[in-house]
Length: 474
Image 1 (tube, rainbow, N blue to C red):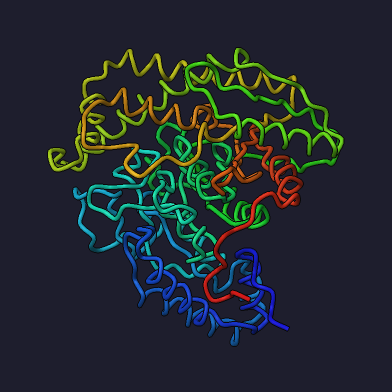
Image 2: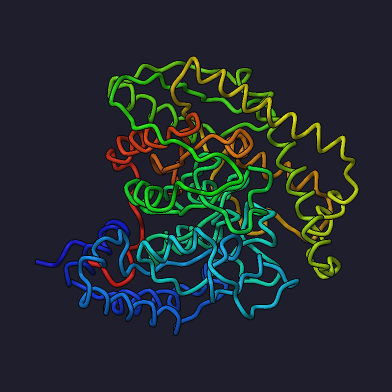
């Protein structure tokens, strides 16, 4: 009988832990898959020597100190870091920009150290748009990242390379970041699970600039809810600032009031098939005993609009400051990046202050809304993944660029600006065979609630991964 292929990274870890495979074999398979799927443009930088060295060290530890190795939830599992965020020692991040050289590599961030402590064997960086300024991962310096389910379409952004690598089976799990949907949008495009954690749940030290005023977070994109839950457990907590640590509230299994938002307004309409998937998910949760509370666009419209403004203003000011601090030659950047930096430099303090005040009101509004419901179920994307080239960066019309992103993922930045956790997962397949993603959002610290609901929905098996994990096909 052929062995059953692993469904996720936890399965890969168990195969290595039990001796059915070795970390070195898993790494060799991932490297081979990276070469085989090079046309997807998922990987911007690959270090085979680093990967094999980490895998051999994992195998040595499994034999010499099996108890210590077994305590690592992802012992020996190959993985990739994003070319933005982190950083991971030895992996030279360029943020998808020609403004930086691929050399050196700084020390581990706190999160990177936790990745290694969990047992991951890192071997490269995944493709990101320049400075993460797009919901497609197509930096001018290359490579152009494509969706494994349809290479004519985007894998999303800004963690598009991570999502493409996981969906293609190059790795079972990959590091990702989310400041305006950058974990959830690529996961949604590629048929994966993506969680944006609560503000303050994840470490970002010792350099806290990537918090972007509290809207950014880091975690992973995965092939299963349980991988996401295990990663959150391994990496979250004791963040050491700049925000208070989040107390995760254990989920008590009881009927939950599910707020159903099946409308994204007249300005950013969502396709009928995507709305139908949300309705189907509501029916599935209702069958589990959870009452459905219908919400209207008017319940959330002002918060969505304020979130979009806050996101663009915070990102622009942050980029302008980064360019000044590092004395970068912004003229070498893509035209869109130049436009965003110029907008940030010229922004009056009063404009930024108004956006930050608006962000506070967004959070308050969401807390008020969550007095009436325990969770909000909504669409993740307004349409199927768009064609390659749908988010061009060769122009300076920043307003148009950000409007395009909002139209594609109308509710994405709401979770970032409010600070609340949100998870996306596929719940069906459209006529073209592409995933139909949904999003669940809950109050701060309610990740266990989100993951419990996501587990119920995942069990319906409405989506099947097209590619097996490298080296573990049946």
